[in-house]
Length: 422
Image (tube, rainbow, N blue to C red):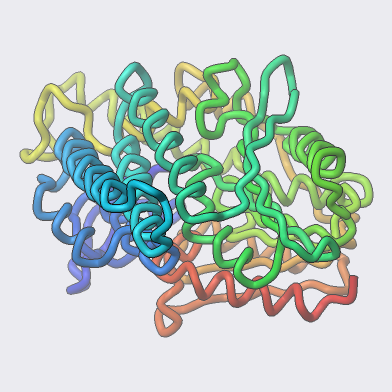
């Protein structure tokens, strides 16, 4: 869920709701939503995302708290990188120079990352869809130019289609990892910070959008309390189309995806999966949604009284928090977060029968709800192979979903899975 506050690097406190925070330290922007997603953009550099120099150059074009300037800056850099990729290709008319093709793919993948970041604070509508579709096209082209074995697939579900990509290994016996994002993600954006690293380590990798992720909500498929059902549909499709062995398949869920995979773990026989990882665990989303509803009421009251919380924001543009909340409401299929609170009342992932090997990951900058539910889940599940991993500031991986050190999460997940006997 979107935050509204944080603490800066000099320990000067801003207004914050500790229960829902996703980072407690300021990295670049005073606006906590911008700060988190700028940190994410930086964190993707190791997997082929923007270089640190590019990311900080983009940051100089952004007015703190102004969502329109964020979108414009990332889209502008995406265009520059597209042009650079095309120039690499123009120097290789016969497509025989592997170095130039690779350079084109690398630039194209960074352009994808730019367009992915560009839509983060855009309200639902034509601009959002245009930026999103552009990012998808760039991802597809980058996979081809980089020679990566990306196979698009689609899963029939609920009268619509759940899209995804599968990356096979030449070793047909290789284990599979299915990576699921959360409220703010699309399946393609799980490749750079996670999927690519697992594929390099010998895993077959599957990425998929569940209801309410990517653009799936445009099909009237929204976040689903019974998240194990679409996950089961994806697993069935992966078995049918690519021959995966679900007993040698691990499921990784991030952010709201931590609820999705916990729900899968609580399903009968944990859907037959070999292992499940959540960063962090979320078992009762209602706790987050209730605070979002309270924040929405406060924001509406502020607008009614005409109070100005941020002098840097263009009055014609929503704040990053407001834009992000509008997108989340679209993904959830609701008009207000009070409605979402009611819709999800009593929804819970039950830990009592969970026997599947389960790794719970918790960054120590996470807020109280994330910490409490992760700890309670770990304590309650009877799985004989369970682990709670906490990551503090020293690891550089203590932010929500390890956005500040994505490789550390990959290393920990890989080590956990290698210890299992499947």
